[in-house]
Image (cartoon, rainbow, N blue to C red):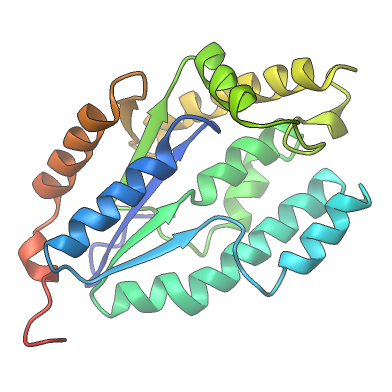
Length: 226
């Protein structure tokens, strides 16, 4: 897995715990780039119609083993990558991804999938030119999530791992282990770490500054109505 500077387009991804605000930040970045007139495409994790039904049924019936779970997400990613992400990069578009393969490396790693196997599984994918990791203290992230949801779902709380009988405690342990994986990947994949305790405006200023500094945005501005 490498960064592909030979591709005309550029790939930007956001990662972080649930509740870190990464989706808000990439949405604001998307709107800013559109406002500049740039060619932009947006993709989000686990959104391929090819496997969405199978994933939903497997979760509902609690039939998914860690390996099956990982393979379903990899299939979803591969479908979006081959049909959307790579063609857009080849067409000279800025591609924004709300979560990328690093989500699998973290979540599936916690579920026991071997790190080398996961990296080989996603070996076809390029490494983003910029990956923002929105790092938030675990108690703050948990507080945000629990305040906004009436209940936690079985798999998002890691209940399939038998971490704790209480769903909230299982979620806390699960998210804590995911954070450990993200922290370990920060150097490996040169994440740009963002302090997600700062205000939305402060974070977005930093995100835009990094993007403007590292990408020649003028290259991506639509010309003549294209």
